[in-house]
Length: 475
Image (cartoon, rainbow, N blue to C red; front, side, top):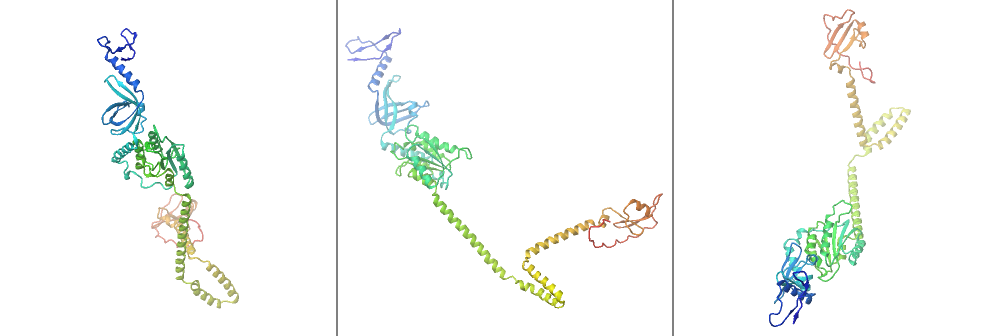
């Protein structure tokens, strides 16, 4: 039997093909360890170029480089596996020990350790039962962190959101059903963030969309949603697995905007449902939860408007009844005018006919004006006239010349008591009387000087002020 070996380079750089034949004796050439390892590697890779292996993950480890290492085992055997960074980043679930998976790849050897391993291209959970086991493990771990606690969630959704953000596929029936239901119930502004909802990268896109809506600042060019709906149509547990990923669950739990999870049909449950503020059985039901029925809202507003008008009318009617009751206790107008009318009649008997006729006319005018008389207007007129009178009194006091004497001024009079207002009259008067606030001082006026009389005259009381008919002079 012969075993083929790969081409190897000799020490002098020439190509040689080495053949080993199974023959008795020591005629077979001696191979280096590297040559033997290379031959084994070529044989293994040629014989197992593409394989699918089912087993349980063990010793899972993700290196700092991004590569994923683990072992596949069953009851009797174990084989190492490696998944390079590019494929590991596209995993639809988080690999953990104990999960039964199906690995697809090629078998190769690692000469550095004389071991063989499986280089995996795709890794998927083996069967629905295994996925449910993984689901329960994730649920327990994330629930222990408090991501599903009621205290983290909003007690109720906004009643009438102005803007709704929808995270879903831009194509398909889901977005059409949501928009159609919103338009039927209560049209509102909708922002769709398109994402993959299944397959490689779906979980990352959904999580980024949720965090993107949450990062929109209020008052910007793009309105910040008042409500976010995360939606997808029905499918198998594998189809919905993106919404069980930890990155999506954490994005929903951290979102500061109220969130509705509407993934799958009514019987489908995902971890996104546990993290969201509200779970809707279907995407259409999510739209119904998001907004009220506009017709019902208008009917309710009309009912409230009628109740407000009715309450206002009842209040007005009650006030009118109270006013009528108070008016009954007021004296009648005829009773108030009766004494004056009687006096007018008595006086009229003592007047002649012409005067009586004139008095009758005046009485009729008085009656007409009295009918229109309102106490509130009289009170306002009284206050206005009193204020005017007080103002005139203050003006009169300020114009009184005697008030100036107390501030250092003097009043000059001649011997006849007339007020002297000019210097020329003062020089020609001869003798003057200077009146101060506390008395008078006589003064003699002459060409060579003035000398007062020996004895001053006693203070003369100012004459009483005459009633003024106008402003008049200051002195």
